[in-house]
Image (cartoon, rainbow, N blue to C red):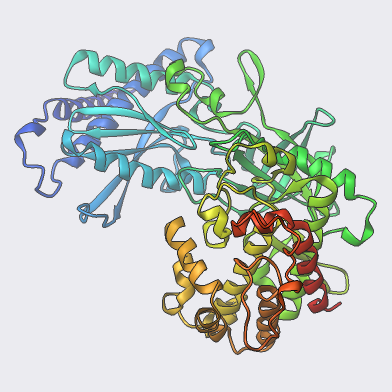
Length: 610
């Protein structure tokens, strides 16, 4: 190595002095004497202090790595800052986002962004502002999950005055370390040890997914999928990110449109390989609060094998091509990617308090489109007919109940002639009907605006196919009043002016009360639903379909008698043979759920146009 010149030595010395001055300024910062009610004035000093300490550790470790080949692959952490104005409660002044990132050592004019961050840092001036720092850190960390497709979980830091805490964002909970007081030597030592561990640990321990890699030269993501049936790993090239996560917590579902990677790298640009959809999600293996097992991969295998020979159902459900639990290469070998793997270094009593999730990845075909891309009400009715035909077959022949019908889980694709085929997707919340019958208490799952009343009210009556049919009715009510396509929605009233708005952004109890009011009285149903159906072309047919659904002569707690439809006599009600001792309306309809569902499917097929 060439000796350093006098000028370069002086520059290095000056940099070290600057770093140390920032660090000392932070350590000596007397936050306790300040008034927490005043606008932030010393946060930049704290930010500079963090940057100085991170830079100091990074430089020291880099020098050590230069002298030891064992550390040659060690990453170097640095910081970047990005100003952003945000108003949240009392945080109405300008926030400064500080993030740790990997220093590649290359010179570039590109300003780092969230997609480049290893973790976010939330800075507050006072120790008593910890709660505000935690909230802001969660806000910033959400951007990591949104901008980084290979992000499994995330770390973060809060610095409030001289108190630093490390936070681990699991999918259901945030775990926070004990306070590290950087005004003390012990506090600085623990913080330096933490930074050192982050510098030297495997990338998967930082929250990255080594099975999703970005090829900077070809500018695409490569995704590995382990297939539990064949126990083989397949690699795919991502062409588009169809669905991205926009939340700090939850399943973090991502969907990628991809093609299988050819064995010959020279053919990587060949687009003759069929498109598939890769779904990546963190799912609960057991429904929280019950013993109901959930395994989307196993269910899709069963559906494929049971329905494969039924040509009438081809394309109405996702065909599983490959799928299984994501495999992570650890120091001890290959391990299933789960919440418990993420927390393996955390104390056992703490791990026991965190719900375990399993990281699954599934390859499916065909690639569907959202129903908002449909061109007409006729196409919507065709799509709904196909979806509910698949739903019925899956319930009867596979013994599986979907349990989460929503506008996002009803999709379609087009054939060579442009015709539509509806497709029921997302079996994350599905379960075996037999398991539900044995459950002590049915669990409450689904998408709130479209959940059945019994589900919202956590009724003790077992869930049946009718809960999903009820969800379909709510979906059609929503699409009929708000619109399907963007053009429909532009011509519709603002959602805030519609009575149906009470189904969105509300509590389960309030949504259930609203649905009871709208759906079980003729006057309210007409006033709050039918009168708001759009006047655009084709919507009158949707209105007729809704009327036919809600006047199906089933148990009285779901059907209502409209004056424009003949009221059925008592002998026509489908629950006439149910034991009179069963007085709960949900329980009565559950006894004959299959019969009622067949009636509803028949209604759907009458409206379906080929």
